[in-house]
Each structure stands twice: as structure tokens, then as C-alpha cells.
Amino acid sequence: MSEPQHVTDIVVVGAGPVGLFALFEAGMLKMRCHVVDALEMEGGQCAALYPEKPIYDIPGFARIAAQDLVARLGEQAAPFHPVYHLGEQVTGFARAGDGLIVTTSKGTTIAAKALLIAAGCGAFGPNRPPIAGIERYEGTSVHYLVRRREDFRGLRVVIAGGGDSAVDWALSLAEVAARVHVVHRRPKFRAAPDSAAKLDALAKAGAIDLVIPYQLADLEGDGGRIGAVIVADLDGGRRRIEADALLAFFGLAMELGPIAGWGLNLERDLIRVDPATLATNVPGVFAIGDVVTYPGKLKLILSGFSEAAMAAHAIYPLVHPGAVLHFEYSTTSGVPGRAG
Image 1 (cartoon, helix red, strand yellow):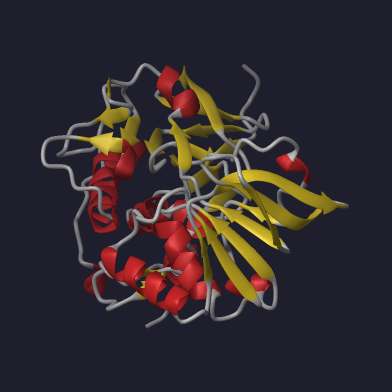
Image 2 (spheres, one colour):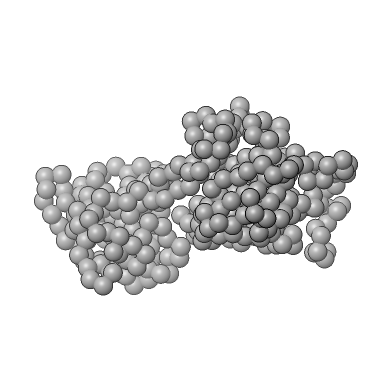
């Protein structure tokens, strides 16, 4: 194998909240990190699926928008100068002396002492509606996530789906869109009861239109932009809704991707780890966050934060063999490169 393009201490797979916090924890222990993520931005699902949605269970914040949490985590890691490889996927790794050489989908090679998987639920993408030619409109007027609700100000928006994402964005976009139609195949929504009740109240007030029971059937448009959404009921009756944008929220197709072929102990598509160290069965490979399982595991961001700290301490001897780690609280040690 040729010489690697980059040399670091840890390669972190995944730039979601837990991966970002791992950069901070590693930095506090004087370990350098490169982070690889298949998405084009940091933040994982928080950034891709619900950037403006509030999160209520982050310690110290009564509520914080997902995109704000991602920004703060990036700021927290910044003093340690992590290197980001976005829009790339880790495809594999090979042994090299007492470390690893990690390879990405773009041919990037990184030598490291440890690999830390913080890949959430793995690689993910939207479940697309079965509409012929829908790809012509994707990214311009057909969307599977909302990054900024302001992008839809003054537009006629059709939202398809019956879960939390569909209902939450219907409630939010009703404040800025010219009109919102919600298409669902049955009257009952799978969203939080309070949100579903608010949706029903808006519909009764005439602020939004519930198109029930209907399903997406076709799109009309030209030049990459839709002009109307065609829906059909269970008997085949069709209805035309003039629209500027379609938001289809049919969930995500998630899979481990290349990680599944790395020889890790898997349990229902999750990586089994030692809960004390977050080590996998493969030497030098650790995993944290929603992608892991162990007795008592809780799928919470704050649990992932704790796992990031534990994994960093477990990796330290691989990066600094023979060194004695004198643990200090951040209130005592401070953050390198940051005054005050």
C-alpha cells in the first residue's frame, strides 16, 4: 500500500452530535482527529432532517434547535483543529504496524491509531414515493428534508406523510407558506398526540388543507419544477393540487453500509461493544452512539456524549503508549488554545 495522504491519531466515522463531541473529548486528551461523513455538512440527522426542530433533553438547555446544537458542538471542538472529510464514506481499513490505514469512497487514505465509529444508525437516505420521473424535480421542488423553513415562504406546499416530520413541518410551514396541503392515506396520524391535535385545529380553522384519504400518484411540471401534485384515493379517484413544492416524509432507509463487512460483532444491525470501553471485537476499533448496543443501552444524545468521553479515555493508551493519564476536570485544565 502506498503512503497514506494523512496521518492522525483517531479517525471518527460520523459527524453527528456524538461524533462532534468525540472530537472535543479526544482533543482534551491531546489526540488529533480526522472525521469522515457521507453528508456534505456536519450534524448528521440533526442537520439533514430537522435542523430547526427543538431538542429538549440536552443538559443545560431547556430547548435548543438541532442546528444550534450542531453549531455549538463544532465551536467546542474547533480549538483542537479537527480535519473534516465531508461527502465521503469510509469504505474500509487495513492493519499497518500498530495502527490502521482508513480508506474513503473518494480514495482518501488516513493513517491512525484507532477508528471510532459514531455513525448513528448507519448510512441513511429517504424512502422515495413510487412516482415515475420524480428524480427530475429532486432538490429543486421535491424535497425529503427541510433545512430552512424560509425557503418555503410564499410557496404552495404539499406535504405527504403521517408521522412526526410531516406534522411538525406542516405546523411550522403554515406560518410562512402561501398554502399547505397535507396528504395522508388515513385520518389518523402517527405523530405526537399534541402535534396531531394542533394540526386538526389548524385544518378546522382553514389555515391548512388535509387531503385525506389520498396518496401521491403523479407530478406535473416543467424545467425541474413542479406545478401540481396529483393524488389518488383508494378507489382510484384523482385530484389535482397546484403546488410549488412537495415535501415527502416517508421515513428513512437506513443501513450499516460498508461497516457491515468489517468483521464486527453485530446484533440486529447494531455493533456490540464493551460498555466499559466502547471497544468492538476488532482491535483498535471503537463505536459510540445509536449504532452500538450493550446491556442497558439508551438511545439518547446524552448517552452518546458519555460514551464519547469513555471511548476517548480507552483509546488514549493506543495513541500515547506508556504515558500516565492524569485526569483533570476541564474547570482545572481549561481548553488548550482558548483563553478564559
